[in-house]
Figure (cartoon, rainbow, N blue to C red):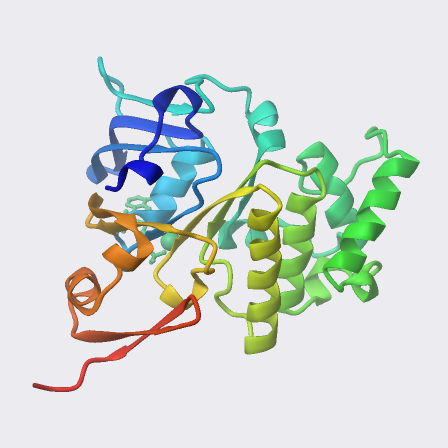
Length: 272
Ligand SMILES: Nc1ncnc2c1ncn2[C@@H]1O[C@H](COP(=O)(O)OP(=O)(O)OP(=O)(O)O)[C@@H](O)[C@H]1O
Ligand SMILES: [Mg+2]
């Protein structure tokens, strides 16, 4: 990998060393070693079942790697985290979260819950005027003020997704970890969502995006890792890693990569 996007381990956001993870009786991530620095927004691209969501659950501490000498995962230099402290630094959004929310929680309550890293707001939580002001500002920024009183269960998929993004961004995390963020969104909602992610990166935030959609990769993300059957097969600059050969091998089907002003799309390769 080129030196200027190589990482210095002291300041690393993520440092994995020989991380192996089992789900059930099978290993699904095999001996992963990688370093991602703050400021180095990265895409982990892989087909269905390659281990992307498993990777993400390692970051959220829902899963742990096999224990062994010289095997570890450090986040911001630490192996052990209080999960609440970790959530205040890293905003994580996955489709699982969308299932976890109560249908009755309103748009405003969802945003407010971000201050407490909880799934709802509760009477004992000290909601201040500042919390309310920031939540209203966030709803304005995301264009979802009309969802303020709407219960989560009555929002469309795209509205739910934006409400959850607002919840995550309201407490100003340094890092955002996203699992296939635009799945289920229409073109407008997808582009709006990606624009918010781009702004987050431009303002100094770091994004880890796990996906199998190349069209979700914003121009601001420069580093790409290819994940296949639980192993990182390539890691480097987006322009070096993404090409017809690498993606056809990754998805085990002949594809042609299209590239236009920083964005990518893949189409079937012409026969022959
Ligand atoms: N709870 C589980 N028990 C056993 N195996 C599991 C479990 N969850 C996931 N797996 C297996 O682990 C492998 C990786 O799954 P994972 O969800 O990480 O893939 P993914 O890359 O996120 O796929 P997708 O693109 O479909 O979301 C798959 O083979 C899957 O069947
Ligand atoms: Mg997944």
